[in-house]
Image (tube, rainbow, N blue to C red; front, side):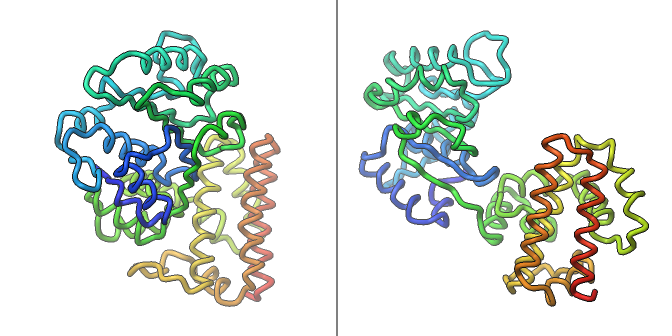
Length: 340
């Protein structure tokens, strides 16, 4: 079980959180936000385990062995409620949001005496999935919850949550992790060696992504295809052939652009001389290694902006073939600017 101490590299906010749990001054509602894969759900579970553990240590770290800790691992503790889109607490046909009926059921549950603990923990996974009625329905409870009830709302897109909900929660922001920190998490999961290093480099600070892709052979095959098509082509005459290949693969376009984004994150690190663990950069084509050495940082950032713009165009259903052609052309022009 990943513990609260594993989050200390995130900074003082985690150290303060641990102190509050130990001193019994934890706010009754936290809004845990951050990019995908930064550990929002894992942190919420670690806090829940700390509060419900039957034998926490002096620092309020959960023991990981007691009945309550085992139940938290299985999401089966009777005084622990999770709200999540697509997994309703009560029967409903709604699958695209967390409906008001789930909030009403949650309020009913926390109003009763605990079965196994004096505390009740509520985690709302992806709070942006709460529909507006559900958010409004929980305002009074967030403002004045029953004694010893704690809410942990995780969120990627805070801007989609009502300001009235946000104002009732203490913010806690998780940032992308450093490569060595991601590698440490992978090692805790039993993933080591070159596979772990490759996944840590590729994950862009997301240990969730690193764990997911480490053992996924399909991902690495797909990644190699994307890099070959988008980043290893040097002749403009090849662009129509490549764009034609991708024109009917819109469902894979977002994943392909994520691969390209990760690639340019490594180019930025290479440009800035940031250490990349023990792994060398042999999987980065020589042309792009030369680009990292010669290009101004502003030009590298322009490549990242081009990928972000391509993602936006595909999202708004602009012809994917045209988007792919323009993106590859942008990359070739950048190499030409550096006389590569």
